Length: 348
Image (cartoon, rainbow, N blue to C red; front, side, top):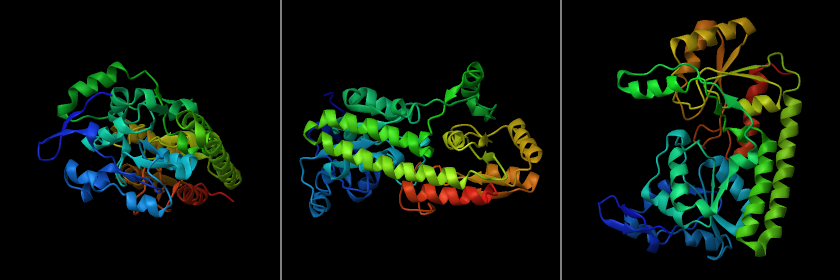
C-alpha cells in the first residue's frame, strides 16, 4: 500500500499506515464530523467508536466500507447490515460536489476494505480512489447504468475565471453524464444487487447474507417505486422546473420533463440568457411551482418565481441529510419529495 506523507493540523508528520481507523455502526458517520471530537491524529486512535459497535453486538472483525456521500452510504448500510462499519466521506450538511477531502478521509480510503464511489461527481474522491484504493473500489455509476446526459447552459463567470470560461467554451457542445441516479429507486436496487456481489468477493463467508440483504432492499425500493408511479400518474403538470438539473432520473422514471435552470452542479450560476429561457418556459407551459433544494441557496428559483408569479417549493436532492431534511433516511426523504411533487405538480 502507498505511504501517505500527510500532516496533521499542527503540521506534524503523520504516518497513516499505523493509525487506527474509526469503527462506525449504522447510521453512517463522516470522518470530518469525527475530527471535531478527536483533535489530531493521535487522539483519533483513541476515539474509534468501538464502544458503540460493541453495544450494537458487532465485533472488530467486520468489514470497513467507505462511501463517498450519503446515498451511497445509506445503500451500503442496507446491503452490509451488521457485517460492516460504514463511513461517509462527506459530512452531514456538506455539498458533495464541492467537498474537499481531509487527510483523515484519504487515510480512511486507503485502509478500507471497500470504497463505494460515483466517478466524476466528486473529483477529490476520484483522485483518492485512484491513488489509494483502485483495487478495492466499487463504481456505483457502472451498476446504475448512467444513461442520461446533459448539455450545459452558458454560465456567467467573474473576472477571475477567464481560464474556466475558455475551457467551458471549448467543451460547450460535449454532453455531460448525469450522475444523480439515486432518485430512481429501481436504479438504486440495481446498485444494491451489484454491491452485494462485490462484497461477496471481499467477504466470501457472508456472501449469502449480502445477497439476502440486497433482496430485502430491492423489495423496499420496489414498494417506493410503486408509490411514485401511482402518486405521479395523474398530474396536471408534467413539466418539472428545478433550480439545478438534479432530478433527471426521477423525471425519466415517472414521465416528467425536467427543466433545470442551472446545470448539474448546484453552484453553477445561470447566465441572463438561461434565466430568460427559464422564465419563458415557465410562462409557456403554465408552470406553477419551481423547486429549490436543501444545501444550496434558493435565489435562482426565487428569481424566476418573481418574474412569473409561480410559487417555490423544496425538493430534496438527498445528497446529504441536514436539519432541513424532511426525514431521517433516504426512504423518508423520498416519500416527502413525493408529497411535495404531488402538491407542486397538481396531482389528483
